[in-house]
Length: 113
Image 1: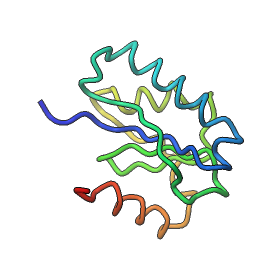
Image 2: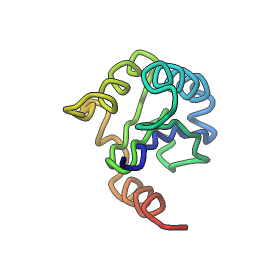
Image 3: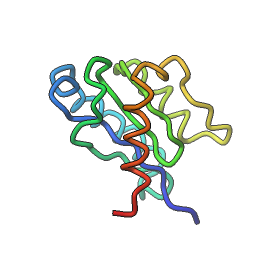
Image 4: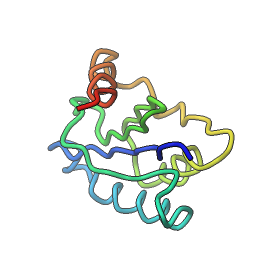
């Protein structure tokens, strides 16, 4: 079995002020309902991605999906995206942060440290 995907929810200042804690909790709740043992996907908090102007930010690793301006209404679509066989990204939530911010995040998440 391959390593589970990791969904990181930003908990930097702007994201927290806009409700990232609730997004984290609801994502985790919905994903645990589908995968109670967290064998295919896990939800974690991340200190800050640096895309504050586009809060709330959520990433899916190793798929390299950087979602911005995430709201509670987006959660079912994100859950479907990471749990379905076709695994299509939620395109309307992508491409909002500066490319260098996104690349920095992938560099950090790809690091073995």
